[in-house]
Length: 298
Image (tube, rainbow, N blue to C red):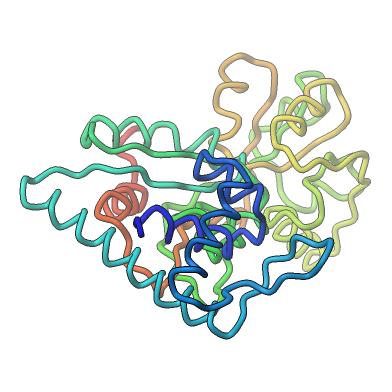
């Protein structure tokens, strides 16, 4: 029995999908099925329930025990690899990271470049997704780390804070607010707005602030992607509130007007999440440390 077979089995359980487990391990679905049968033949126990006509992944009692113990073996194997790397002072391996677009596109690239410069034998594998999917992938073990805006405490997760950043108002260059040096929350009442979708944490934070201040804005459109929001503002749909790092290039190019919001509460927290029942790889620990540092750039 190979360690890879245990990994395929655990991936199958975590992802609840033969096709996804096959994709992650660069094998066919039939190969996944064959490896499960090999394990069942070796241990003379049925590990998965079979339901005719369905491909559901449901563990038998024996399968639950096997899955739990296989996870321990894989964790010990990973720890052994990290210890061996430590003997020669080498940090390597791949750190799988899931993040939301607004953070991944505008805040992580600099950190990833710095990490790769410091640890050239290591690799950061970035995936972009919605907040709910990032949390789910971290909890399932599909990725080692998640990077989120407004991370919420959740059972089974550890949150490491990253430096906060400001939320700012953006407007098209011909908007009446374009000449303003700063804007108060009361100035936004009745304005046309382009929003994040309702389940996006930044949108939830905005809604709380508007409600607390009795502000009613006109929703013109809502999107889940910050790049689409920026483009909608550029062409005149309305105003939007976004994290400042996401619009630094647009401000330099003059395609958007970026206006500071006066109140202190217009800040966005960012954090790294990981499962608290698993030891992070050495490379992942170093990356988390790097993300938690405040940038020395102006």
